[in-house]
Image (cartoon, rainbow, N blue to C red; front, side, top):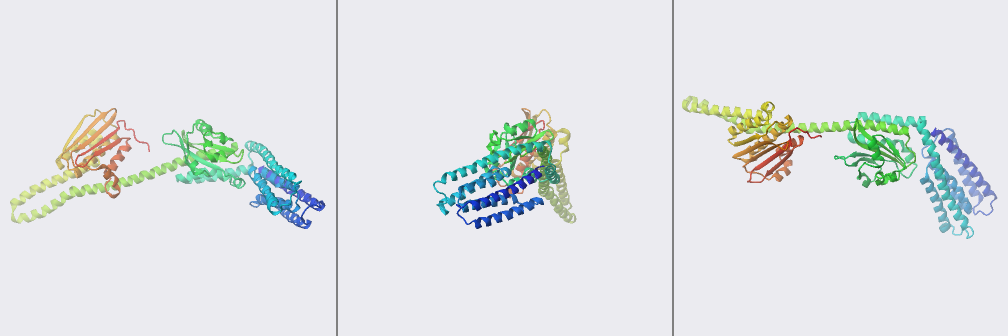
Length: 573
């Protein structure tokens, strides 16, 4: 298993460190040309031996504190730099190959190259600034050769490390390591449980991005590059993909978009199956993201619910062969659950938005009903109450006058009844459901003529068949709102309403010869107004996939036009 192999490798490294310390002890004892007092080097050797003894005890009891490996490499590097400086012998530089090769095998090329650069820079500082005579002209060539040997050791160690890792990943595919497999499975299982419990859309995206990063927390500490991940969604037209969420992408990459038609992403979308790549820098679309160009392993998983695909999740690692087939299956299963969770969260947000709309609509309806009651039946009923008091006084003094007032009272009561019936008609016209839009408008127009004394001219001859029921409902509410606005605010003498079927669509138009208004000023000041008449009309038109235009100027009347599908194609939210 990988843990046992790693522990065994550290065990052998600690034993090799004993051998190197012994070699330095011997060389320091028999080399008379070294600059430093042997006691100083012996003290360094004693400290290094004590530390190595502590490392051996840690490994024996299988206790590996955090950052033990990195701390040991740093101390080894400082130790060999000090020994080289104190001895004054360039060939001591070759001893630094020990931490360089260990770093290349265990942590990768970046850390190994960093140690080589530190050793070279430190020795250069010794030669140029601290001890200019440390290296003679004759010793310059051996010094340069030793430095070159360090860099060659870095490259060779990294190549050996890469070669050694390939069989491990293959073995991981065939026989999953029990502890690593259990750890990954447990982490993904826990995150799946969290997914099921949340209806927060953004939180689902964040958890999806973290599924890969959790597995690489330990590895991320050992490399100079962090793993990256992103979620790509199709845009509304489905002619491209945008970054919906990301981890460790720079700002320009996070704002980038791709077509999703070629490379790894295109292959995953066309096959609807997860896939991996080891050359993202050569991918025609992933290479546009600078963070993925530096990755050595990329895993792409489709995001789909049932047969509907709405995007992909892409995970990148700086390590070669970072994703096994078993791990890909685990991540794919998690992303399938995440896709369902995303749909649930999106549905929940849609329901919340619809609930808000219903509450707003209910509030507007209550306000509208209150205004209509106040401006219509309430005024009439108040007038009836006042006349009743007046008639009561006339009954004792002037019966003829009282009879005349009773006649007026009868007419007021009849008007109040008509106003209430008109209000009820506009809120739920039963004739609209039974006889259609034309009949409902004819009845409504007749009520307006009687109550408001406005000539309503209705032309419905060109409407040869009924639209879908919900289109009729939306069209009637828009027409009623337009006529009501004209009655209350425009003071028109005439209102013209026309209905027809034009090119397969319902074409509705309302015109009046009233005062008119500045459309842009009214629409821009809705934040300060209590009425949302024009907004409601636009919203109702949008719900049936219709187009509403409003044309008006002060003193020139108003024209409102609605075009909507007769078939009742509803807008998909």
